Image (cartoon, rainbow, N blue to C red; front, side, top):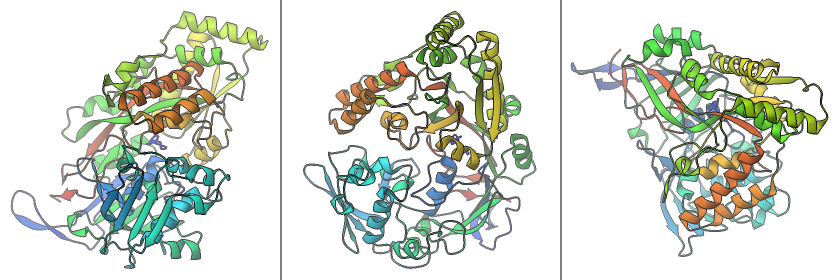
Length: 541
């Protein structure tokens, strides 16, 4: 996720401080032996530099992990992962389900003490939609009246259904009723930004100095490519519910290194364990495996040979042994992926993935036949050279090497490997400067729409250059369909179109592995985000 974690999010898609006890905040807690003062501080590992801490520009799970602690939208999530009112104290919905009127909390404030206003929300959302901003997640606002037209340069800002009626009243008009609008509003793209700050300081989000947020924490330090530190925001309206005073993310990408840092106590929580230690850690009380609503995949650039040919794309997909990857490399309870939407979406007829089933199977003989036919169609005696690109991380390297070997053994195709650091990697893939590139996609909430949106023709995340009008039309119809059964049917049809053309190769549906120090309790592990530590408590030193 992005971030992708990333994927995740490499995503997710997904950095910790070595000195976790260097703050001055103290909180009284019980460790089972009586009360004593324990510094409520935790050290995490983000694995890489957050590409952006501007809510309008972030598109990966690493950035999102930090932003989710710094900001709060109209809705936020509780400890059960349910959407609850955040910066808004009240919500009224019109009878036709299209107009939402929010009341901003009287005690909602920025980290500098100034009040959060409805005008800040209006400014932030329209800034996301402004074509000049270049927000990669602007399309998530296309449910709003006039939003898509404005973002695509075909309409004006004044025609967008976003308006502050006064300091405390914020009104949103949708194109059609949307049953999951509250879930959508919990994602960082819908966070407010302080209008006066952003207008006066265009680079306001580049470092900690002058950075202002409205959530549970404020940014106190950002040593680029080293660490990010946030501390409890004393101006946050719900600060009494926040237990953890200080959170530090280190940025250590090497799995062996951050594993050793955990073992020596330099890190309190790590995600994505080195694959060679999972077996020995499985019986450790610190160990957790959490299902993760996302898909690990390899994007295929349909404008670059040999992936200009559909049969060749399918041949590559059919020649990869997913079971061998998840059993011998990742080892974290992942499920092999023969489709795009993961398991976990309940529908009237059952789990969306179980109902949709698989769209292809692993079959080396058939893969060879398709490769030969594809090459013949293109007039190739030899297959054009293929380079597989991945972002620097030990686990990604091992998966890439395994796929390289499988393609050579099963298809006789020699694949070169190349890797880049995460921020550079994002820039490279955003420019579609690749043939075959690793990516992970994690849903911002649990619904097929937010997974399938990735490959919309105008999605800024779709770097494969694949555009299919039938797919886009089906997705558009699904988003305004009010009957659940019909909506899911349309989404199944859309996924079928995507999986027929295969502009990507799905590898597995995510699970996430964690080691968490027993010194901490009440950490939340969402199925589509990295851990939320707002309510975490350190109970022993």
